[in-house]
Image (tube, rainbow, N blue to C red; front, side, top):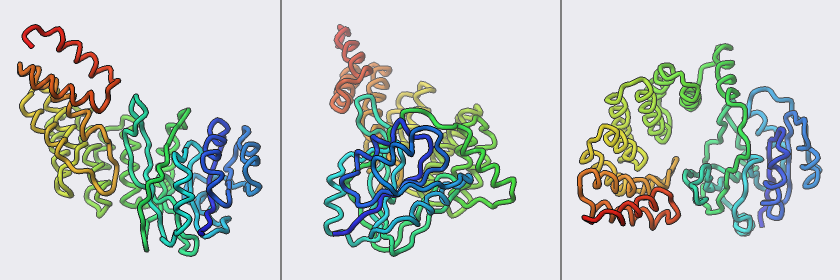
Length: 351
């Protein structure tokens, strides 16, 4: 049976660290904690789970910190978690260990959640890595490891459950520090730098950043994400036609994604072009789930069902509108929007 070292970097995580470690403690064989400067009870809590606690002076480089934590591991495999993560089914990790020979295990990462607790956005991350392969993290921000060798996909989901917001300016500050020092951003870094500009409402700069990224050989999933973000920049800049063009540009790299179709539907919906919106919401229903990248589950069913309900209502087709609302209700039976719509239809005498 393979053995796993859990390797974490932490700082001031007293609110969440115990929850995280309790979710995995019985299914890993070693816990490595690299503390980057906690001033609360983080190290005291960590000491309840492991004696392998190391100080790492923070230097605005997440990859360097993770590589340090990985360097302290002694078991067959290295696994990483953030302090505000929870392993939904730790037993599944234990079962993975029984016959584990892969170089990389990709696991689902659920990062946002619907009102009923169901995952709203998910994607696969490189989660467990063979130590003998000497994988290295890259990227001062949004660090990653490029998977290689024998790669397997597991179903032991990791839940990202924040309880408080972090420093909203940290990532942008790190990127601009790199640029000021003359660093040349990789395509991935260029993509995430443009996203940080968008989050800080620097829409023109963000749009320029996404355009620069789309001229690189960046990852296909990031290109599609860049088209979505570029569209949002165009909307913020008062250019709805440019927003549509940015979304359609994503079709250069893959078949239409549900997220893109829903956004196209929304733009036509905002313009009260109900028939055109219907075309795109139905396209979202037909869109397959991608094999990689970010997935917003509601864009494949709940959102288009709900919006089709409204579109058909605006066109005076109450029967079709009611049918789509009922479909939305089968996905989210406690949804306030679904329940309000149901009451609305009950009060329609013509219906």
